[in-house]
Image (cartoon, rainbow, N blue to C red; front, side, top):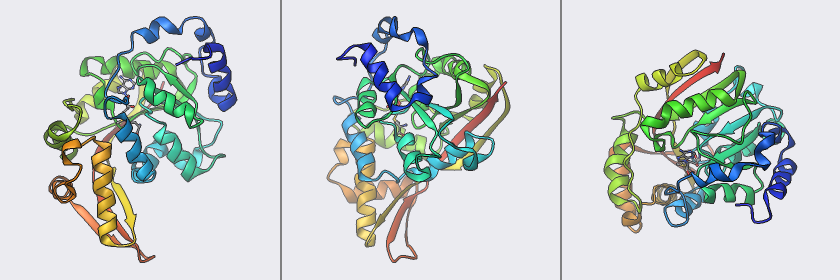
Length: 313
Ligand SMILES: C[S@@+](CC[C@H](N)C(=O)[O-])C[C@H]1O[C@@H](n2cnc3c(N)ncnc32)[C@H](O)[C@@H]1O
């Protein structure tokens, strides 16, 4: 992680984003290694489904942007209108900085918040740094690089179910610790029993290179988690969080959808079975193909997600 020493790594982070750098714990230069040694590795590596996952994003950066933009709007009391580069947002399950990349592309540099991309997978953190993003290696339950009360928004999304149930309260309390008073925490995942949770249990578990047996969330659990720390104005709602692809004809749009889903979930056993993948997607989510006003075709599957948000007291 620090081939040239931690001091050079910290200088690089400061150069990438001096605003985000202000949220880092000043003592970190002396003591990160013990905490890092305790981090376990997960499936988001080059040995697991990490590379496939990254390739899915390369196929289409904006496929999941509708959901991402919804979550970004929730992270500020004035919605998207309030977003600007002086705000510090920490994405605790950042992967390769997907949310940061979408925000930068769609909001532009001046309105894109300063992201701290944080992940338990060293492979993902390395990828962020390679792509010029501010990124640190730590688990969501112990974001030890970040000072108390130093960030304006915390996002835990697109993988919150990977945090074991017994550790979720600790993760929410850690999010509260790093948020400034008035800062907003947004937690996103899929609902137990929903088509997406069933997709993971039935399809991903059976056809992926890595098992996928993680409990998802209920609205009650989300409310209980927010009650474990000092938050006010807590709400839970459901949002549409689709995958959307464009193609010059119907066939290329659905082909891209199938390819993306196979890579995103590492569905090795379905890699050369496009029609089977599309049939499964239709069964679980419904595949909708429409023609756009520009004459292109758009393929979409309608995922739904559960979103909790609250303001740090
Ligand atoms: C499904 S990926 C999502 C990445 C990115 N947010 C996106 O939407 O593409 C989930 C990420 O969460 C990370 N992760 C899983 N458990 C974690 C934990 N306990 N602490 C921090 N990161 C974790 C994984 O390493 C992975 O990069």
